[in-house]
Length: 171
Image (cartoon, rainbow, N blue to C red; front, side, top):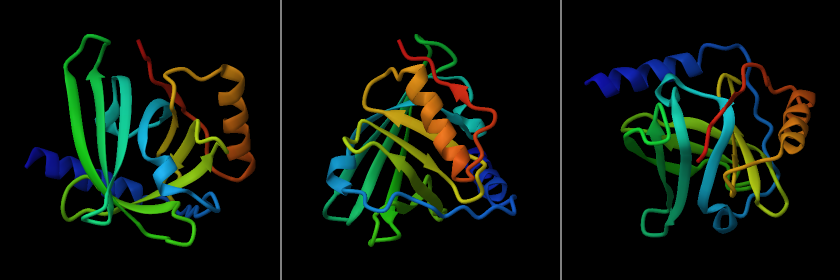
């Protein structure tokens, strides 16, 4: 019941903005996007506070026609308890493949927008229409400060909020 309350609070908070950002990448190859993504930085939900070694793994589930997501991390420090959160996602916009509905638990389905993506799929940026949350992820555990700065400047130039960014430590 405690988890349900937390997820309901997230849903309410995600809708508490007058902003309705909907600009995504124009073409996302789902198969190339699958695999491991290290969470580098972002503006996170309260469930992600204290994350170390954040890792999202996306797997295409052919049978269910969806994306299975496993988010794992160490809580509070590098040797902290390893936690895993399973989620499911469905492609909402099949023209771009960059707008998904993600479900951390039934019956919730939240918007998930792929805002930016490197041509070689080495890094990506995901956000929500309200602008409240933002995840910058990469195939490698580390990202140069110059690249991170460029990504944030590009997002800001497109009207997506980039304040209060938190870095995720990786060992």
